[in-house]
Amino acid sequence: DQQVKQNSPSLSVQEGRISILNCDYTNSMFDYFLWYKKYPAEGPTFLISISSIKDKNEDGRFTVFLNKSAKHLSLHIVPSQPGDSAVYFCAAQARGSARQLTFGSGTQLTVLP
Amino acid sequence: DAGITQSPRHKVTETGTPVTLRCHQTENHRYMYWYRQDPGHGLRLIHYSYGVKDTDKGEVSDGYSVSRSKTEDFLLTLESATSSQTSVYFCAIRSTGRGNTGELFFGEGSRLTVL
View 1 (cartoon, chains in turn blue, brown):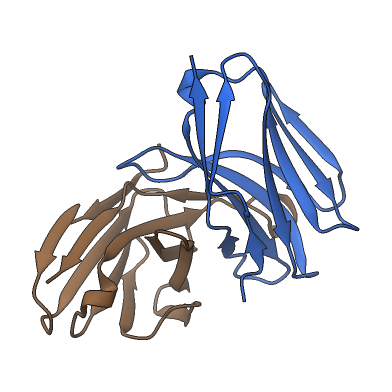
View 2 (view 1 turned 90 degrees about the horizontal axis):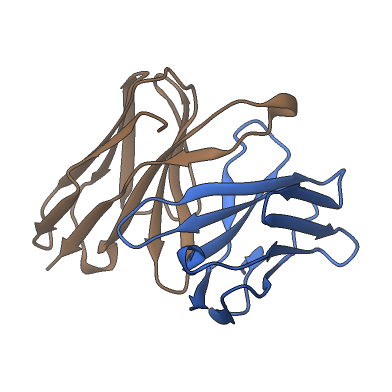
C-alpha cells in the first residue's frame, strides 16, 4: 500500500500560469516533506521542503503547502516556465534515525510555451 | 554537487549473472541509500547504511545485498540478476540538518538492463 500518493501522472500548463502539483500521504509518522524535480537521465534534485510544524514554505517561484488534517501537500509554481518541465516527486520522512525518504510515483509537468 | 559518483552508469547483463553497482562519496556522510526507479512506482528504497558495516533493509530488498567497508563506498550487489531487476538505480547521501531532518542528495543513476 502506497504511503505517499501522487494521483496525477501528468499535468500540462501554459507558460506564465500557475502549476499546482498534489500529493497525499497516509502515515501519521511523517514529519518532514520534500519535493524533488527530475530531468531525464539525471538524478532527482531537491527543490523545497516543509516541516510538519509549518503549513507553508516559500522559495522564489516555489511554494509548498501542508494540510496535516487532510494529510495533503501541494507544490505551487508561479509563474511556470518551460524549463520547469520535468517529473516532480513528492517525498516524506518519518520520525526515526534512518530518515529514509518514501516517494510518490511522480507527476510529469509540461509547461507549454 | 554532493560529490556522489555512481559506476557503472550503464550496464547490460544476462539473467543469472552477478552485478555490483558502486556508489562513491567524497564528503564523509554517514548515511547512504540505494533506491530503484521504475515507471508507476517512483523511487523505492532497497537498502541503506548508517555507517561502516552498518546496513539495513528497505522496502524492496529481496534479491539485493549491500556492503559498506569504507565510509566513502556503498556497494549494491545483485547475486543473480533477474529481468525484474531491470531498472535505474540511484544512490543517495543525506545531509544532516536540524532535528535530524535532512534532504537526500542523489547521484546520476545507473541504468541496468537484465536480458
